[in-house]
Image (cartoon, rainbow, N blue to C red; front, side, top):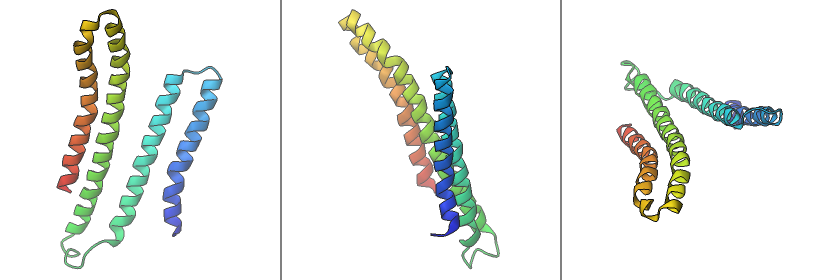
Amino acid sequence: MNPFTIILIAIPAATVALSSYLCRRFVRRGGSTKRATFAHMAAALLAGILVCSLALAVSAEGDVPASAEATGAAEQSGFAAGMAYIAAALVTGLSGIGGGIAVAAGAPAAIGATSEDPKAFGKALIFVALGEGIALYGLLVSILILSKV
């Protein structure tokens, strides 16, 4: 294992561990759990973006084919492919988070409405499914992005 690979592994692990420690400390001192969770997710997302960018920069340096060296097309295609992978990761992650938030808000309301009126089950289920659809649309978009790479 070369030292750069160790650094690529250590950066997200250290960022997430430090974020976990600071969020736990924040909540113990009376801070909002919602703010701590948001900060922890943001730190994990930034660590992932940083690692993807570093890996892209390292892989783009040595992967230039002999036929493409004169035109410079290999650097552009390597950069474009890396950005496509980052875009696919962001689409999937953010749509999953958005779908989770939507389902977390809709499912308890649907259960409450169903407990009061059992006929409302079908209408309530539609709202929960719409929230889950956000995550499925994000997954579909990421598959479309990756099929173009």
